[in-house]
Amino acid sequence: MKSQSSENVLRLADHSRQAVIGLLKDYSLQLVVCNPGKAIPGSFWGDAEAGLIQQQLFAWPDTPLHSIFHEACHFICMSSERREALDTNAGGDYAEENAVCYLQILLADVLPGFGRQRMMADMDVWGYSFRLGSTAAWFEQDADDARQWLQAHDLIDAACIPRKRLTGC
Image (cartoon, rainbow, N blue to C red; front, side):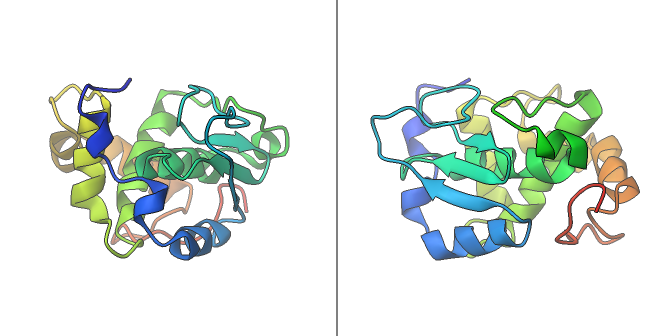
């Protein structure tokens, strides 16, 4: 869900494409940049939202970074069986969706010039909704279940540092 000020979010074109490619490569994902104006393959929501088909993450230059990270984190968190059949709909349950949101915030710190504060602000602008009213409040006060899920799946360590691995690998 996009808000009216969604043009203020950081987009792929605002960052080093090579840095994004490197981060995704750490998780066996290939970034495929598509021509604007043509539908993004594998995009569940359409418009400028990133898409997933197997190990390829599709985006336009103006795809929001938070969308790229969100879809990448779905890929990271899903089972290997789901990754093999992945085409557009990442699926997953409530607990996994929370883990995806938490992990995308952590991974934002890995991309120079992005960081978790900007990720959370962009998530708020785009319309992510959390019961405490903001992404930051959720992350800081209500996301223990997401952190525990990621730790139980060995995707982050005890200090909440991403392990550069996929669920089930």
